[in-house]
Image 1: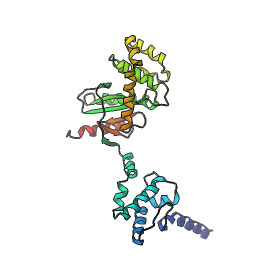
Image 2: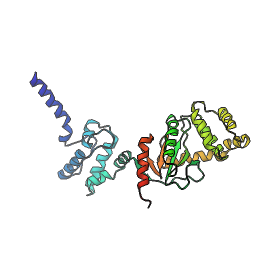
Image 3: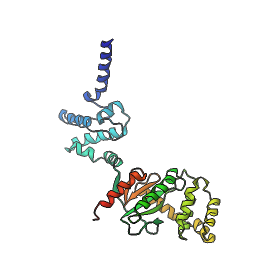
Image 4: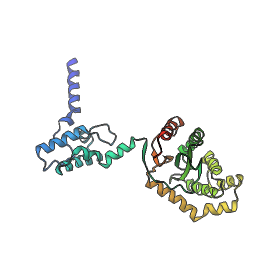
Length: 284
């Protein structure tokens, strides 16, 4: 029995190590390469990890998951590099797939310009940290973010400013009218009042309820209704959507810290230390 177990274990290990010994890989065209060039490509593909998330080296991914588009393309890049006399490791590292994977693992991405003039905000205009939130009034994660970001503002009342940007998602049927209503309230200086009411009663958002809430909050209803239905207001929402798409907003809520896309939890215990580090960084 022990011999059978050892034999099976050996066969399993041999199958697992097949990719290390393979001299040809599925979907990889080695034609035209010298034996030395081919060996260099194989070594590079055995050492470099696949950025698709499979936790395998590129060579192993080609053998065990030949349908993977990323390992297929990176193998092509490696072959092209050796043919051009370029360094294979540099070519792989500079590929969009590897760069994208590196970005996914960063908490803060490189800063981008965001148009915030005239957008709803709270906190000091000269705060050292500006948080820009792209949000959707019907998004359940955005509902939770309201309290989380409020806790951040309370923790740093003089150092943090919050700017709200519209990003209504297509799968939330009343989110766009809510966005337009919030901007109509902003025109009367009451954005945050309606903001808080709509997030508190997000499941009840519709045009009739929005009008009722606006009246209860003391908005001048004639101006409010005109602004909510105005083409200019709809265009302002579209501008935020377009800007968000341009700078990498893919869902809601998405937060930018001084222009740097934040890829982490909005829980205060996670976010506050990151803001503390940002505050400790000398201003250039």
